[in-house]
Length: 413
Image (tube, rainbow, N blue to C red; front, top):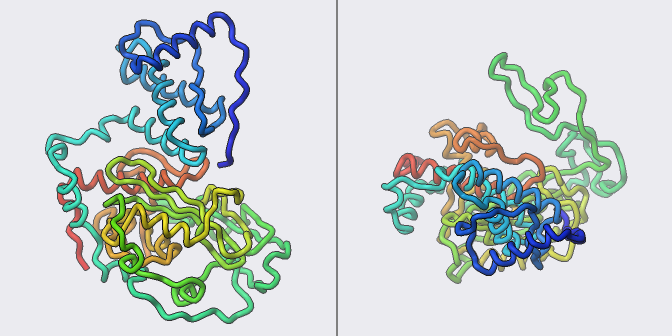
C-alpha cells in the first residue's frame, strides 16, 4: 500500500453546507443516537494522518452505514454513526494500518456475537485468560519437531557460487542474479481435490502434472535452506538475553513479511497485535541487508522502499518495547517468523500445530486461510495482503478454541 493524498473537496451546494453544519454539531456533541434526522450526504471528516483516499474513506463509511441499518434498524442516523466510527479509525491510524483496523471494525459490526463472550468467559480475568493460554503453549520438544530453532546453531556458510531458484528450480550464479532472465513458475501451493484425489495449483487451478507456468519474473530468487546457513548470515539470539526490560504486552499475535534480495529471503515487515484488544501495537518496515530482487508483493504487500523503513537492529529494539522473554507469541507457522527475526523464544502458540486438533504433523499443516474459514466463517488474504489481518486471524482462532473448550488443548510432547 502506498501513501495516498486526500482528493480536493468539491464545492458544496446550500443543502450540502447544511449537511456539513449538522455534521460539525454532531462532532461537538459526541453522540448520534439523540438525533432524529440523518445526513443526506456522506463526507468523511478531515484528518491529518492521510490514511486513505477520500473516495475510499467515503466508500467504507457507506459500507458501515449499510451494516448499521441491518444490525440497528431502530437507529435513525446510521450515516452519522458510520462517519463517527470511520473518523475514529482514520485519526488513529496511518495509511499502513488503516485498512486492517477498518476491516476488524467492520467484522465486529457484522458479527458482534463473535466478540461477545458467554457468561462463563465474561467472568474470566486477564490473569485467568493467561493461565488458559499458558496451558496450550507448545512444549519446546514439540517446537523442535516442527522446525523451531530452540538453541543457537553452528554457523556454516554456503560456499557454493550458485543457487537453485526457489520458484523454477533453475540453477544460477549468484554473481549473475541481477542480470535479467526468464523465470516461469506457479506462485500458488499445490492442493488436492477431495473428490478425485487429483492435485492442482491453487493459483491457476491447473493440474499439477500437465500445466504450463502461470507467472513469470525477470530474476531468479533463492532462500537460505539450513539454520546453520541462516546463522552464518545473521546470528540467532535468545529473547531472555536481549529483552531484559518488561514489555508492554503479555500476549501478542505476530506476523512477518519477507522479500527476495541478493542475500536470500529477507525480513521486510514485522507486525504485532495485542491479544486482548486486537489493536496493532507494532507495524515496522525493515531495511534488508541485500539489494532488492523481488518485493514478493503478492504475499508481502510491499512494493517499494521509503523513509519508513528502519534497520534490523532498530526493529529489534522496537520489538523489545512491546514484548519480553515471557510474552506469549501467537502465530501461524511461527517458526518462519522466528527464523526471520533470528529469535529463540519458548512461549509459543502456533495455530498451524494446534488446529485442527490432533491432525497436524511436521509435514502436513492446514493453512491459516483454511482454518479461518473453518472456525471463523470468513475469508482472509483476499486482495492486498495485510500482515495485521493474519495476526488477528491467528489470535481469533485461539480465542475461539479457548472460549469453546475452556482449557484449550492439553499439550503433549
